[in-house]
Length: 283
Image (cartoon, rainbow, N blue to C red; front, top):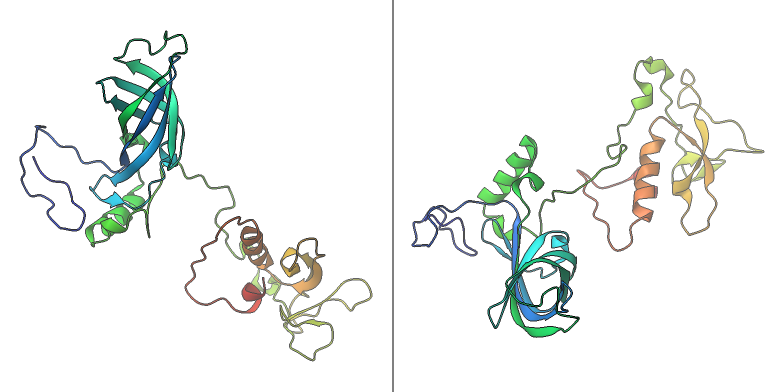
């Protein structure tokens, strides 16, 4: 056969002895584990995982032992006494896997009257099928670059891909969308202010507005005036009231960045071509 890959050394393409006549490369993940299996006699299996390894299609063993990404897939157990069971994973973590059995070589898997069997076992988890891991031509090109530049071992650490990502309709933000089809003379450019200017929000560098304040100034005499808008991104603590500022054409972009950041529950990665400043930094 042909070796597809190995962690820590480059031997792709090296001929090796193997049982299979044909070795198929896969782009998904698989997993193996050992532990203690409890078969409840009613078609349910619960596994206390003692050691697990997740393996990429390139043969790299990942550090992560969390099996939750395999939930909903098929898996098989092989017990100490020789029983073989295939089941669908209902729930999974780094310490437990449970599911519903649909094939078994053991007697009493479903008709055991609730008599549980507990034994040491091995666990094997299916990789997602090809149609679940299909990438676009752009995604495939990126994957090839990552796997061919000594970065295969970084999969699951600094890069990875998923077959079930879903993006909302507004996942990409395009500044000036509202300006399409209009003259540049209609472009609303905010007038910026600095410390010491009257009615100036120094954090955002924009003029404040609202009841009892002058109307929003224009950046230049010939330009449209700024638009007085209550900005969510001015709120710096839960329950705060948004401030009204004189804004311009792309304020929705700052607001969207702010809204995304405050929804984070654990961590948030921000990637940018340059350091944030101005309104972006304030938001």
